Length: 216
Length: 216
DNA sequence: GTCTATAACGAGATAGAC
DNA sequence: GTCTATCTCGTTATAGAC
Image 1 (spheres, rainbow over the protein chains, first blue to last red):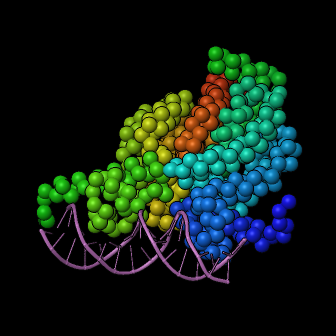
Image 2 (tube, each protein chain N blue to C red):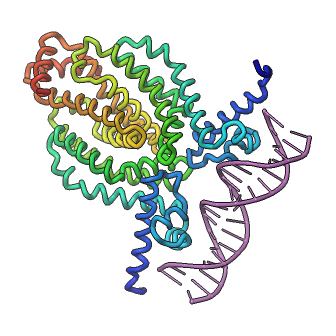
Image 3 (cartoon, chains in turn blue, yellow, green, orange):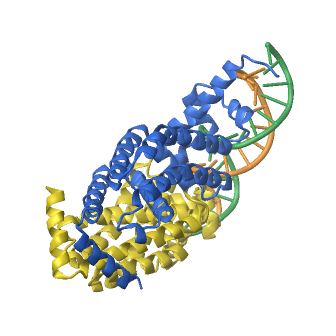
């Protein structure tokens, strides 16, 4: 039903999406306007409203679709993660890729813009949740049987890791060296996980005992 | 030299600063304009330019002074921290206070706005560094003698903690429950520090040995 | 130091030609 | 589906009265 061959229209719509991504990534959410986006897309300003109804809606849809595309890229990788170390390695890889690609920066910008726009808040939640879901699932798998399992809440940790990534990503654009230091420190600290996971039975029991005592 | 009794002028300048803080905290950086700020301050729009030269400069100065004021509030507290547990407790307290006061949210918003404004980037670095400095100094003190000392880089961790806080703070405005889960998970995980710090000598040696092996 | 007025421009959004 | 033209409003910034 309906007309086929709407490739031209779809192209323009996609170009507008790409345009808003470009503007947000290079100049931030405050620089977004129908005009700046249309200019980046090589399209007419009025088409923003024809295709999306409002600038806000364009940003929201771009945020969701771009995030979904990035997450989809890593879905198999997340599924293949079997240990905490592998999850950390994947984190490193994602950070490097997103740093170049700028999609986490996009999410961080829309998160900032979400204050003052319920539509953007909704879109940001939806986008961020795609990441959180992957991280949580991987965490659940990886922590099973680990001595850490009893003090690690996968869902909460997935939220913490994901939002922490966003803060770091924002900071990255302002102080790349500082951001690098932060990551390096965290990775160094992450060695602790390997250590705990690889302790012998005696030491493991000692940690477990102390853990129960501290938690109670 | 010069006129004394410029209290009225200083008052207006301060009201403008308070105005921009109010706008940023309640509506986000995207809602900031000379008019919105002047309206919140109960002042005339032209005074923004008389006192600060530009909207950007007003935001930058407000960001720095407001952050300095908040950090100063906690400086003694940071200085009094003697253990990791106390530092975590202070973190909890600061989070609760800033959640109500909205000053970390301010910093997060200016951080987002910093992309596209070098002046804002500079101001955000300056503000954030005030927090980072306090955290780093406390971390250095607290980690001395801990089994964690050899894998904890205080400066990098201070950066990570501070920027992580910002990401979490942004997320807080969009999904308070999710943010709460994240904090709860981190606090639960922080128990690990207490555990490691309180291990007996045998277990500590085991951890240390494994640590060296893993790091090498 | 503070106000009004205004210039000059960019913004969101719509109407209508093509 | 895309364009031009336009409306209306908000925005930055300045000039000048008070």
